[in-house]
Amino acid sequence: LQYDEGVNTFANPLMMAPEFLLSPNTKALIEAIIYFNLGLASAGTTVTMLQCEDEDSTNQFFQKSLDCSISADQISTIPSSLFLRVAALHNIGHIYFSGGQYAHAIDLYSLALEILLQRMQLLHCSTKNSVSPSSLQDSIRDILLYTAGTYNCIAMARYYAQDQHTYP
Image (cartoon, rainbow, N blue to C red):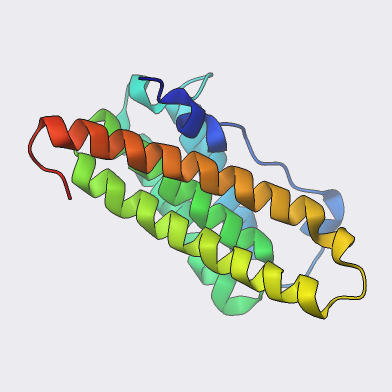
C-alpha cells in the first residue's frame, strides 16, 4: 500500500510574505511557522516522517508549532493559524504512525480532519452569501486536497492498526 500521498501533504517548508511580518498580532503565527519549519528540518531534507532520525526533537518542534498556532487563534482570526494547526497535527501524527502508535496517529489525524471539515463548512457558507463565489475556489481546492491527504493517512493508520488488533 502507498502511504506517501498523505504523508507529503504538509512536507514543504512554509513561507512568510514580507507584508505578513509587518502585520500586528502575528508574533505567535510567525513562531508557529518557524517551529514548523524546524520540525521539517529536524526530520530531514525530504520529509518522510517514516525516516525521522530524532523523533523526539522533531515532535517537540511540531508540538511548539501547534501551541503557537493555537495562541495565534486566540489573538486573531487569521486562517493561516488553522492551516498551521492542521499541518502540525498531521506531521505529529506521522511521527506516531512511524513509531507504530497507530491509534494515537489516528486521533491526531482526526483532529486535523475536524478542523478541515469545519473550515470547509465556513467556506461553503461564504460561497452562498458571496457575490463572487469564484474568489473562494483556490481556498476550497486547497482544503479538499488537505482533506484527501488526511483521509489517506487515517485509512493507512487504520489498515496497520488492524494488523495489531488495535483498530480504533
